[in-house]
Image (cartoon, rainbow, N blue to C red):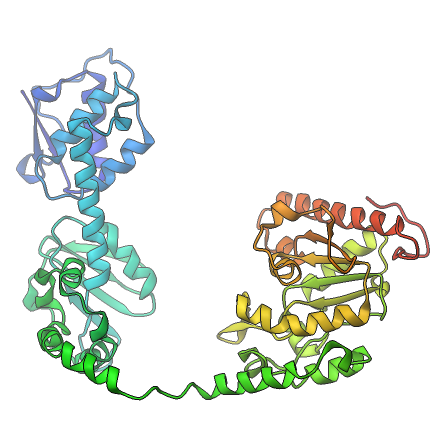
Length: 492
């Protein structure tokens, strides 16, 4: 019998360092007694065991090591025996992990799921309390069922990166300094303040979002077991909320319907005004552009600088439709003038398509964004916003009368075709429309700018140029639909 000590409870590397020489010497699991830390932790192997000079090759498994890293966090003292036994068996049975009915694999799966569940509960039920009136330093007490603090603490470091905090547990503590995550000894519940000034606000918030009409006590207690309640400030009011649920539900049913938000009323009013204008109401693009400047068909107009209508000749043999204006377009009021627009101009020039002969526009006419400091980051328009703005795209099509339309990206394809097919399914193939127009689908030039790998980006640009060259060739085959430059050049 060999006595083997692992220096930590839940770290993979020390356990792996113990296991490798044992596996190499083909030491049977029955001949090992595992010691978790303690007085023997300084020596990985008992002095009675000396690895032989000639050892057998050890076969590893990335999947098993990933599972072992999780299972080591379980509090079951038998996990070390189990993991070594599986590692020993894997030397001869390479497909062992796939045998879901094997008792060892069943037990391993149970340990992994328990640890992952415990980690999830920690992310849900840790409650920080302020350590002083500055509200810059916080601490929380949590009692996990397993040794899950080390694998869960990085979640809090990412989520609460701008504040200093500590999470204390009986077996270990985690500290975030706003720069790095460090771990220390375990602590006691009394080391964390019993209350802070924000907890009344938290209880008020919890009560306000409690929906009595959707209350299912058994499901709530399954997701939020009562053993966690003693550390949750909102737990003090849960019983009262449950007892009053039926009365509050009855009051909700009897209450009159609330009025819709003002912005929804403005949207409905704008749609009614726009719907009274049939396509033939606009005899020119300039009239349509003037009317679109007052568009309130969807809420996007509330935050955008201005509407960005299409630009180009009318009629035009070729129309290109993008997704929506970007930051530059929103400021200038013209489509495709930002980085994506400059890239589009370059590729059009490469394939000998004259931008001056092309009408360019977007499926959505207002810039949708989310503010991040001084920057405005693009947000993808939703289906309702695309449908609302199709009104103006239909007017542009009716007035420009293109023979070919290029959908740049999935949003443009959805607006034109009403389909949710992927770019890969539609790309490059001519699609005949009921009015005789041909639609081609390709990527948006902004996609090329987002490809991080330089070599891959170059490949995607070549593919984009190939798509546009095929569209050029298609148009040259259509009588009176040429969009090429006057001076011939060598292109794709």
